[in-house]
Image: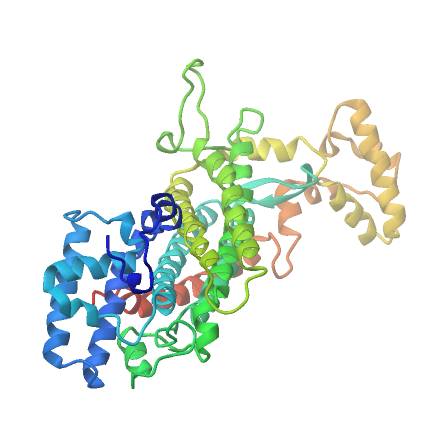
Length: 474
């Protein structure tokens, strides 16, 4: 088989080398982006007088046919042609003959693959922001529905202080907001146009890089040809950002798994997002959050793999960089799949308010409020802390809770405690008393609703402004 680069060689490539070095088995995902980029490139070559307009029209028509046949599965992509770029060119040759050889004028596969990856990744980022916003909206809906639902807040996985379920959900809303903002910020570094850098040093042809950038709706040009073909920082940044998102999803997954257990019984996931046991008919397993939690490891692995691949590479392009795509594709598909499931799973989740309230009523998470109560009665905090510790120990030994004690029993530890202690220590009062910005008091959580809604609206506007730009049809 004649290689497009074979003029300098006297022997055919070893079959094992062909199979080992080929990337077509995974970079086929770039076919659409490769063809879109090629169309913009050919259009520019005609504008610059490097091709005639008639030649460009024939090539673009042929590329459209190739695009259609690849999309419909009417052609086989051949490992002998190594990668998606050479496969497209060979398929174009079958459509229009020798004129296809002019497609590659003024460019290299090095700047071509950098272009394809940026086109692919900017679309993924916009889609992922939209998915994160949908998850935020689902969490916000649950928060609004459960503004008055109280559950234990935990530190060290020990009950600490009561909070509202709305407050807990809003923590994740803001967590995912930071993820949204990181992706949005990364977009400006992804959306720089590398084509025209050639193999490493540009080209002698009088090309117009800005025309291609404008056609493909890039924000600007990669300013150094060496950097343009060797840079994969934008991929690393994507993998780092998605690792953070995966970590956040995994933390939420862990809580869903715990909360849906019989021991907690705080929530029930909809049957559509659970599976059963092949042996134990009573089981309802939270497989979706478990698997999302598990897949976090592979997302982390893709980040570490990419960092390791690039750590010792000299400028400019090296064959090692063929390893830049599989992890990127895997992470994008893994995370988009997880996000597609998470929003509807959260939306349909049943919250067991009674079980949550029972848990709060049967613990000592109001102990801090007893200490704060004593401070309000002019007892120094350290003394109040010690007094409350003694009260809690008394309750543990007696097998009861703070609100079960009589006023006389409270007086055994401090005469400062009065009848109003019973109102101060109710779960509702404990939550309402934390009326500071960012706190769980109802009015403060409602402030968080407004802030989140403003951010979500801005994110949706950002997505809508870019969707047509990143989903180019050529």
